[in-house]
Image (cartoon, rainbow, N blue to C red; front, top):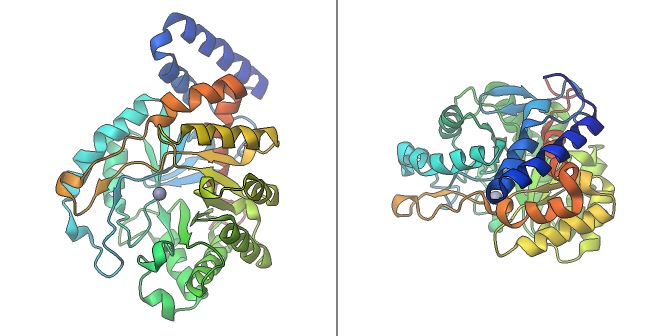
Length: 359
Ligand SMILES: [Zn+2]
């Protein structure tokens, strides 16, 4: 596709969405979303930047509309017993497939699957779903230290941060669990601050891994105390704070604490969008946009998933509330360009692997 100037793109998108609203008001939301997704970022990310999907590397300019935090399968049984033997992969595939087809129909082209190792991360399932839907799916490496460490494997307590990082770097280099699937980012997690010893070790391991691979560090983080401590750990190791994604930032009550993290360089992931939380998400996005920080905001549902251990995988929450409850309101205030920034340009930049570091 020929490269166009940003202004030309914004004007074209505005014209097209205006026309769509006139022609087909009932479906305008979905149609406009598809229009946004079909366009490509122009200024960002940097030319040549790439994103690693479960089916290999793609140009960051091609990721299109992206949901940065979703799940297709989670098993909360705990690190000691979790295993793909606990479910039928075909069942999980059949359960997730219509939901991923739905988001593709809404214009989404990339879905970031945030289920970490020891919580049901399943690269084989993700490849099948990506092949069937044509969605780019991105998976992760790293360990999840939130939820009082129930999902931290025993070896993480005995090994050094360096040794843990070596395991994660090996997944990046060789593939996950004997597959050729490589992680596109790190997913770690910490409990509310101050950081415990194990949580601090996970952040240190993430810093080492980032320096070796260029992978972004998405961290499930309960509150601003923990988030700012994580940023301190990264800063002390000279990791650019743009590598850090504060997952679930919406759970911090003090907007100033969120704003300060963005001003330090972090990504602010507002990822629990549902019909009932839409007001809070719109308010937070607009507050950050008012502060000139829209370029560091990510939005998603944290929805899904096949629930291992529940009959028929339990209740799968669709990845769609944003399109009906949030985007129309944001489009009114931020325009098509602002929505494109949030759903196309920002995710592409957040996931772009730092080519200076990636090997
Ligand atoms: Zn999640």
